[in-house]
Length: 199
Length: 199
Image 1 (tube, rainbow over the protein chains, first blue to last red):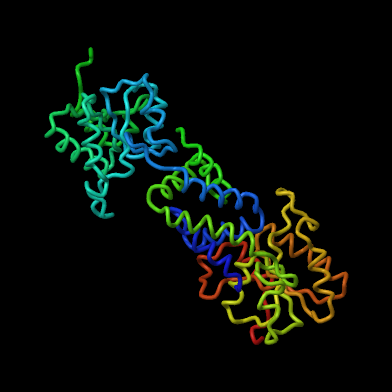
Image 2: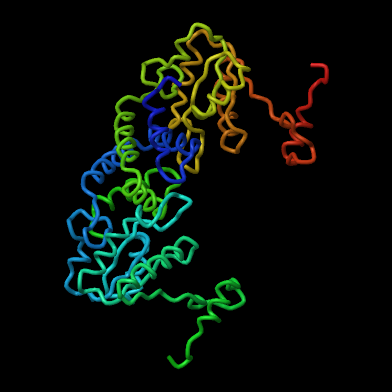
């Protein structure tokens, strides 16, 4: 292979998550052979996004303005702040139409094995956001993975010290779920966290 | 989501083979959040490769010159021409150190379901390459898939008409393979194509 431009492209494609040497090669060949227009568009989109995309100063999600549309909206309940790991999680929550408060996007989770602690996650910013006077309740909606749970636990202690009400979204049997097919950990939690049937 | 730069990036990432909406989103978030340097490098590599990378006029592989190094080399046997589907296959063949001839890279295979016929594959170029006076034997090293076999069959007929010797790399039990674990199609071929044990 003498084509160093191609080699650099293969190497550069490996910055994509989940792309190893073989897929990077396949992608590069595909782009050069079958989809030069797509490659052009991707190259330009990348460079444009790097220029344009930054973080909302209030909720930390991606935006092209200082404050994202959602944080700037006057229609949302400003006393509720839902903490999620990623913008995707925020979108999932929005799609439920069950929440009308604001968000804070961690852009990650506490994960000591990956060298991500409270400081790396920038939790100071979350604390100052929570203490800005309007927030009454922080709803923790991190994932129910080990790391998501650890993050929720850490935030519960951290924000509890500041005198804010901290809640966690409910765990349990999924809607439409049959006990026969629910894993026993979930079922055990659902039993432990049972609530009055008339609530 | 107000960030249209991000949305365009997610859309653009879908030009990569095997990348659907979910992975495209994950990739875009990863790049914007964790690897802006990688994104920069990828964007530039793409645009550079589009400028620099083209096809070798003789063997059709990717190169940045008119004729690739391998075709320009004086150390190779110019009477042998090995036909492969992709540059990866050519590299695999090179790594065996068992072949010292030249190559022709189809950059695909005949695949009627994908709308790729002999014409789309540019087989006229292969024919004129074969007939340029030096080639004595064309070794077909397309894959042993249905499409690779169809391509080999088509080339056998096409080039046979031109009076060139056309051969196919051997099928059979892999080196180190145990009959117990070889699929029966391969074993049946190995039996049909058995050869004198003293060869």
